[in-house]
Length: 232
Image 1 (spheres, rainbow, N blue to C red):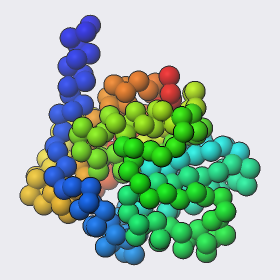
Image 2 (image 1 turned 30 degrees about the horizontal axis):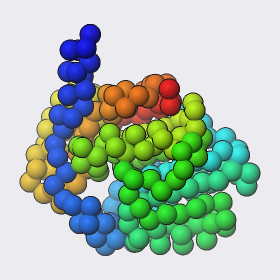
Image 3 (image 1 turned 120 degrees about the horizontal axis):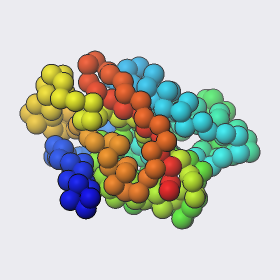
């Protein structure tokens, strides 16, 4: 049993590395922040919305989004928590933070949201602060060694039985042709195609989460997963 568990854990780390630094990532997302919605938003939103539905955010809850980007999901979270709850967002890019702040002001939601510029592998929040957390196409942006650190940090700031909703590119749906082509492109242009498929479910299990639901999906032929896990 121990050998099987060790093999499963080693599988989760058997993914391509991220070859750009966090400083380079910050600069890149600062540059594209004003056009980010046109680049990726429309393609990823339907799966992000489905993941938020599975997360079942309730009025009065405190919810954290890590890597909120241009703020589309964070706005939906703020609507769901209502005036009795609170949405929190952390992102490495000040450009994304500024874009999101403008959207929240325009929507009249800024007073429901607390924004922070920071790193998901070192969350500036106290233990057991949140009822739920959310990541949409974010975990696969972290380098392999950082993935368990991020998940451990989320585990720390979640309340007992707190929920984590995740959507992202996955290696667990099988080795499709599109997946191999995408990984080739990641190797060739690592600073521009900076995310890559990862073992989402296994990474969660390895960190101590209990899987509540898992759904497979495909985006342009690439395997994706929508997972909701609970702090065990």
